[in-house]
Image (cartoon, rainbow, N blue to C red; front, top):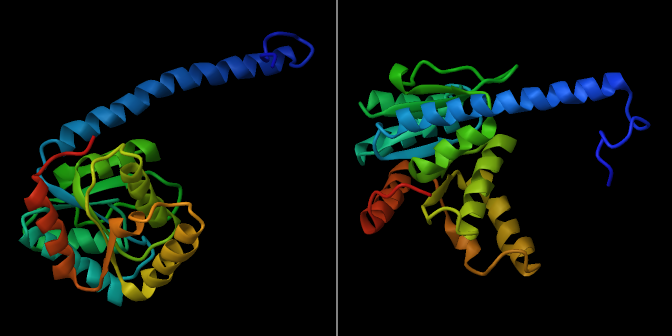
Length: 237
């Protein structure tokens, strides 16, 4: 296939100039990406063992799943772990609140968005990192977490859940516990995974066992702690 610069027939001089400007911006964008990784590594490497907690930014305070998020954050801290969230409202805020109330590390990896996502007041000020790039942020969630606790959420929550399973399935990350909170919310998805995906041969027989389902925050914290006690506090990658 010819490149856009192989002939002036396919592109006008104005289009070629615009293309070159885009390439220049992409080159400089590399340094912005690098800066996000450097800041993330610098801050997160000093926090200590943590667990990443995911869930919807749209969950309101005072609702059952928000209260569950608070209890999860508290239970994890009581087991000796800090809490990492996306730093925003909803379930993220709840988990950070539980962690902070219990006196543990409360980390927020905030993504800068034009809507919905704003930082919550329960993130420790020295542990708030703002990201422009989703992929840089997602590396921090995995690399510095001893496990995942996933509460009900939308596309973003599902993205984090299935990326974690993919990384373990492909050997790109060491195995770590993934706990789903809320049997009424996740039960149908797990039935589909164990049924449709497994029966179609799209996953292996042991893949559904990579997740554990519970409604008990104490059990969720215990599952992660038991795994870490067996395998040690080792970072991913």
